[in-house]
Image 1 (cartoon, rainbow, N blue to C red):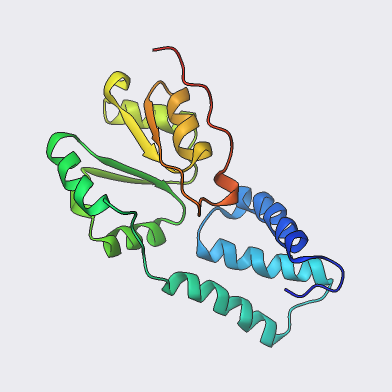
Image 2: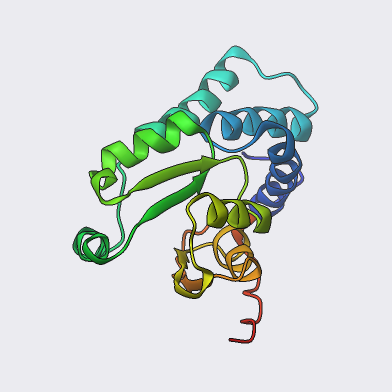
Length: 183
């Protein structure tokens, strides 16, 4: 967005702030992102989007939906090995249809004994999953790239965690990794 007064970084910061407030109501996923783009554009310009602008914002969201899924190096090799020795549970958050479609596209679904798409991943969610699947916290590990949704709540729920930093981790998922609890 070429804003007459704000730099691209300031526009992005305004979008991130608006999106953070909207997530609480609208949740995650490409459709929620699309609506946040629209709301931010109108907020920053003070104008209602024209048909052309609405179509351009829709094209942004469509490009995300159409983007190829890229797995981290080694995932195709690691998951079959891990699944041969452990019960793997995929825990993600967001739009259920969107997330399950990504899993199907990845070709990795057969490695997971269970899949849960949650509205939010927090300590209570991990405690509930531990109880549901009768996971022993001493031998249960969360592996993920998000300190906010993967690592910190899993540690707080008494589980172990492996943090896989990634340069593309979403700004709303970034926070410091908490100190590892005793034991």
